[in-house]
Length: 330
Image 1: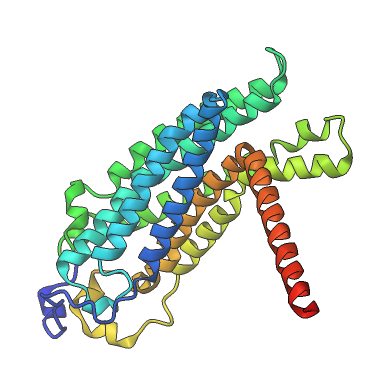
Image 2 (image 1 turned 120 degrees about the vertical axis):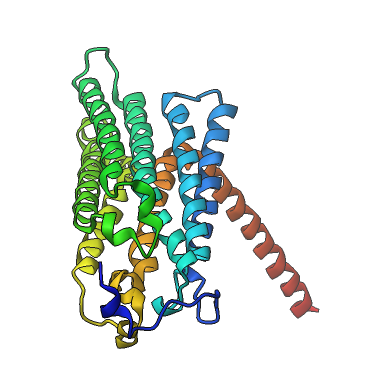
C-alpha cells in the first residue's frame, strides 16, 4: 500500500459522478446479446414443451438460462454504474467499489453459468448418442458430468481466498492491504484454461458417433457442425484467456495523465480497456454456447419459417412483376 507521503502530491479521485466522456457501447452490447440469447433459449424450451419432447437437457438448460440472465444483469449494471467506459481518473470511489464488486461477483457466477451450460450440452449428447444402457459414450458422458461437479465445487471455493476479509475487496482505498492480485490472476488463468479444455472436449465429442452414422459424408459433416456449435464457446474461451493474460502484462500504451492521480497507485492501469477485454468476451462465451446448443432443437422451426418467408417473397415478387407488366403493357 502506498504511503501518504508518496501520494500527497497526486490528485485525489473525483467526488461527483461525471459521465460526459462515458462510452455506453459495452453495456449496450451485453444487454442486446443477453436479450437475443434469452429469447432464443426460451424459444427452444417452448418448442420442446409444445412438442412434448422436453428432456433432461432442457431441464438443465433452465438453471443455465437463469445464471446467464443473472450474469447479463450484473454485466449491464456494472458497466452502467462502475465507471466502465470512462477515463480512469474520472471514476469516483463509489464507482470503483461497484467495479470491484463486479469482479468478485463474476468470480463465482462465471463457473456456475458455464458449468450449467456444459451439463445441458452433455445431457443433450446423451439423449442423441446413447442407444444402449452400457454404451461407452454413456460412460464417457457420465465421467464428464462428474468432472463438471468437481469443476463447480473447486472454483466455487477458491474465490473465497482472493481477499480476506472478502468485503475489503470492494473498498478502493483499503483493498491493496487484503486483496491478493497474483492469486486472483492465476485463479482466473486456471479457471479460463479449464473451461477452454472442457469446451474443446465437447467441441470434438460428437465427431465419433456422428461419423459412424449410415449417412452420406456431406450429411454427416452437416450434422457434426450442427452439434458442435453448442460447444463452439471454446473459441471464445481461448480468446478470453489470451486477451486476459496479454492485458494483465501490458504496461505500455498507458495514458500518462493517469499517473498524476492517486488512484493510479491502487488500480491496475489495464482497467482502461476492461470493458472490451473482460466484459465483452465474458458475455460472448456463454452467448455462443447457449445459442449454439439451442440450434438443433430450433432447426426444423427455422427451416419452416425460412420456407414460408421464401414463399411470401416469391409470391410478392411475382405479383409485383405481374403488375409492372400490366402497367408497361398498357
